[in-house]
Amino acid sequence: MTSNLQEIINKAESTHELTKNEIVELLANDEINQVLFKTADRVREKYVGNEVHLRGLIEFSNICSKNCFYCGLRRDNKNIKRYRLEPEIIIDFATKASSYGYKTFVLQSGEGNIYKLEEMLHIISEIKKLNVAVTLSIGEKTEEEYKAYKDAGADRFLLRIETTDKELYQKLHPGMSHENRVNCLKIIKKLGYETGTGCLIGLPKQSLESLADDILFFKELGSDMIGVGPFIPNEDTPLSSETGGSFELALKVMAITRLFLPDINIPATTAMETLNPQGRLIALQSGANVVMPNVTEGEYRDLYKLYPGKICINDTPANCKSYIAQKIQSIGRTVSKEYGFRKQLR
Ligand code: 5AD
Ligand code: SF4
Image (cartoon, rainbow, N blue to C red; front, side, top):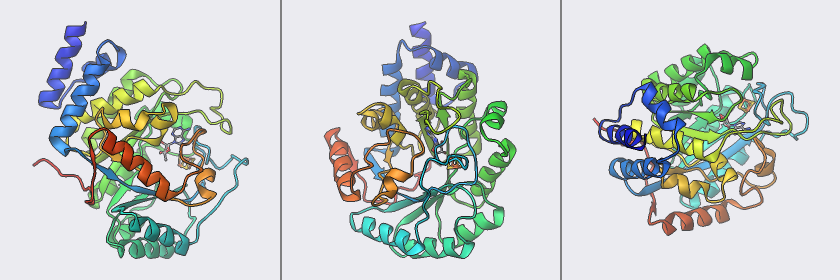
């Protein structure tokens, strides 16, 4: 068995291709996980180098019109105080954080028409004046809206597919459609955004086969960034009594994604650090090359509660950055001063 697993890993390292069965075999067996992680680390170094890109995350509103079963921001959760930052405050957070050296901001919020289109365009174009790359993570929109954000200067868009298992997707996302999600991703790609997607690990009834399909989907879409995180049950949601995902399995999906898509950007996700105090460092040594520190200020850090145990909620953006920069240097890596666009193989 071990030698078969080793052969699969060797094949992935040299060809960056695997069959669905081979991916499932890697996911189902834990004998040589450390070899998998080391191989993903080697592939990361070869294709995207030793620099770690920091993206400053601004969680600008926790209002959401959707009702995803796993998420604390879901519409029906009455146990959180909702907020909506004024455009000038969002621009101010970005301005402060850019003075600490951030070259990219990720603007994330719940879904819905929380801001008028003109307000979003104003926020994007003002932040672009800071000479930074702008990533949006604001959910499903119309093609016209995606195009307008792009024209205002947005460079990248994150929209996780969450799961490629259609049946499971429909169960966990009432009133939403898997087809529309895929369609949004195709539009985002077509419009020329650097396109980010990703999935949750450990959703109820999620199979290893469907995780293999997720990885195949990432490649088929032509993703530029992939975020993989364990599902962490939130007590204010219908999935409160579920077990949740494991750190190790999330790490394995991430590592195989690196073998599959060697030159993309892969964040060490915050949810990984929530499950393991060294989670982000371990992820950075198992295929990841990006970290997204939170640069939202004040009480809003705590109010953006997708899942419990979120790290750094009582910290300030400045502390958060120097803490993570030190950690990155402690494992022999450097903090990039670049925008961190994908350096695509041709
Ligand atoms: N556990 C882990 N990740 C979650 N997300 C939402 N709720 C949870 C949870 N309970 C993730 C989703 C979403 C991203 C913004 O946060 O994958 O795309
Ligand atoms: Fe809203 Fe996103 Fe949470 Fe779904 S995952 S409830 S769309 S914030």
